[in-house]
Length: 80
Image (cartoon, rainbow, N blue to C red; front, side):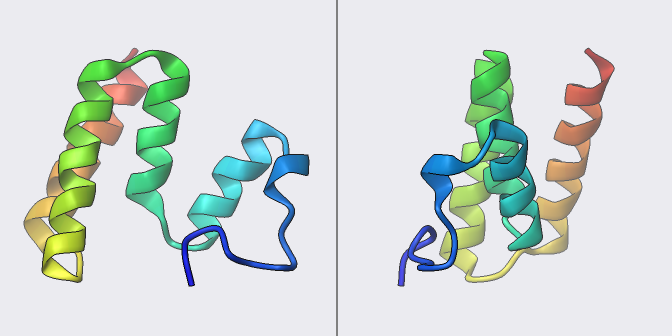
């Protein structure tokens, strides 16, 4: 089953905010950060978040070091 394979969710009928909330509700925090960075036009944040996402996929879990990096990116996004 892929990320979006959920018969009860019709993503094409969601608002952007509902979609972002859906990502968070499903514990896809890094994916949400990638989407938010794309929406905001923040290529620098998007690139870093994609690397964190890739690391998470490689390890199969989110190591503390990647969580720390992601939290730093959240702070960076909030500053601007």
